[in-house]
Image (tube, rainbow, N blue to C red; front, top):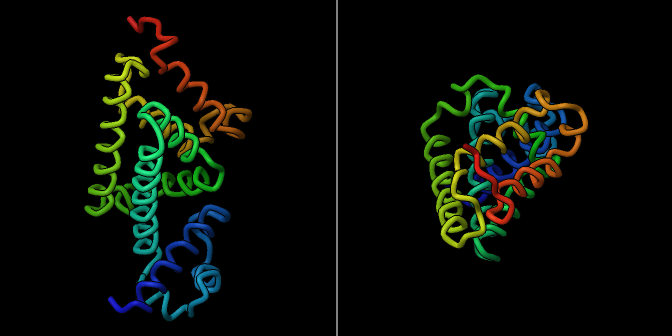
Length: 190
């Protein structure tokens, strides 16, 4: 891919992610093109329909999650990295995009091979951090990666299922949940 085409692709995906986070998945394609600084023709040449664009946004989003997880892991111990990543994931712009993507039928994003591969890579990295935090004695051993993924899913993708005060600040409640996953305060789940 030519350098200018790659730049346009990056601008389009970033602009679309922002627009969808702000206005939902039905934001007009013209708004996305304008925000990206490209013509509508350029947008449609790269993405022939809305589903193709949304699939690219989903893949981009999972890749940014992997990068954020790697960045957090490079800066601190495993437990602190997990906490930092969860706070990052719960930032308002990201939760709006997560919510918008979660409302789509699975075949639009989740059912695509590249998305599945990227998500698996992200989950494996998170799992390595969880196992390390457990081995270090900072994370309780009776919870795991699936528990974290489920919490992130509920708090960042489905805020409509939460009480209004919780949905208004999911990061706060995710951090409270993480406190309960700390080995320091662990009580038996059985």
